[in-house]
Length: 87
Image (tube, rainbow, N blue to C red; front, side, top):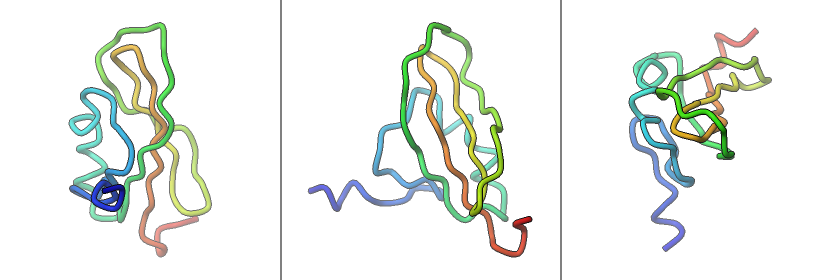
């Protein structure tokens, strides 16, 4: 059963949960041809209840780290880009 949960929909690995509105917030990354994979990470509670938004954090060795903020939660998102575009 666990294996069934590890699949991708529109470049987004669906092994972990996503906060409400995450797919809509991720649409710029989903539609970016340089992005090969989007990996949702840890969800933490937040005191703010704002509209869901995607925020860039920093570059990593394999891509980038982003945050999705909104609806009382913050979720880490790791984005993998094609190797030729890495610095």
